[in-house]
Image (cartoon, rainbow over all chains, first blue to last red):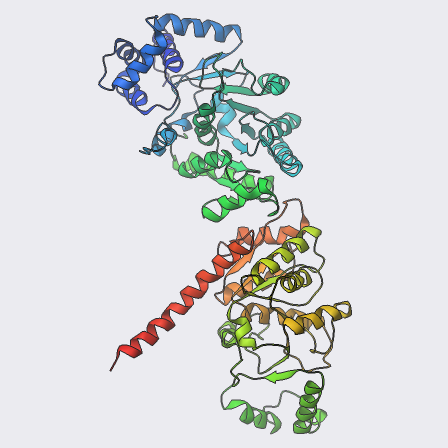
Length: 330
Length: 291
């Protein structure tokens, strides 16, 4: 992937950034178009309306309102650089190749667009010093309820601390509850932690996690599919979830209510053949209800009680990927 | 068991095969009569496989004869005490078992399960011990019309543990006390362990509520699995040592099902019941159709 002329790569980066600004990530039509024609040509055709898939063009037209996509991308790039952030594209060395596995799980779900638009990101906005591929080589996602109990935050912190101590990167969504506990546990261990956000890397959401995000950017990585300034719309969390499941070796769910979106991340991990692990809790706790339901309904999901068991699962998955070349892992 | 109980007894008494010092037992017939009298006096009865109320499910124990103790065979008779027919009580039954040194979480869950199972008419089977056992019995007794069966590791007239004397008295009013040992037999730890395999064999399925990681209680679920019965475990906090055994068994045996409430348990046990009933029904309808 490094056989590109630097000038070409700059052009590609601009085109991908423009596409990232114009279309919500995961879009199937756009991904196929980029795959066939490359990002530069895809952007041109999208802007000129030269496409059979009319809906995509009209959405882009509404967003651009006659503006220049090149200007849009340049603005985004300048803003990114001013933040000390960078735009990482599949043509870069540090691109996490395992994200390609997302091509496998798209399905035609007429009810829910989010199950159809699960394709790999076109580019990622990143804040932090670590090269992505390196940070995610040994990584585990720790996810769960925002309204976590003291039990859930305790267990998530302990787990992240222990995994961080063993040199594993803790990936989560930067949300309240289990997410924040996992990031904090990892930061305490001195390990790398990555927050995959559903808004721009310059927008701390939730706002009360501003300090946490600063510390994550300093010691780990903030990653987003959306350009700086993008707002954390509700649907974006669902789109974002697929990246958490795909970029890591495995996902652990610590606490989840019956309707938790953490279950969606774990479901994506199962579809991607990554270890989907669940920490049980008291049957009297509604916050463990989603965990137990998932364990009962999905035979392939694994009950885990501590870091050692999680390591067994993800080490094995990593070994499998390295030797068998499963999916996008090299 | 070839030759029936009477012939077997004769052979045992005739010397060559006698595994016991027959002399020391004195006149066996007189001894048996005395035991029966004692049984009547404590308000109990002896039931045998020839009786209608004998739980035929116990026959499955014959198929697990390779157990490490070599003692996995059906009992020859049972002492029972209380109301109702044992077979009827056990037709729809679930064993709820677990640690004696249970946590408040464990006893709460066991009592809720006992109540939730007894309410829709499931008999709650347990061992009458401290902790999970007692909580399950009490939960069932607390439900309106709830029935419960305690399989004891001592003679039926021996309240063991003694602080459960009142509990056992109440169980007799709403169900049965069951023992493989005659009245006056003392509660011994080996008898207690032995009675656990009977619990899994007479109930449709077995739920483990709490168990320490290295607990012998885990063998109970293993036994249920070997009998081909639903084996279930209740999860808990991963930081609780008393849930460690449940989590270990859920991780190691994919056949063990995670359950969180009575509804989960009933669905597991109903599935087993309908799966095991089907062939019988098929056989019956086939014989009706044939001329």
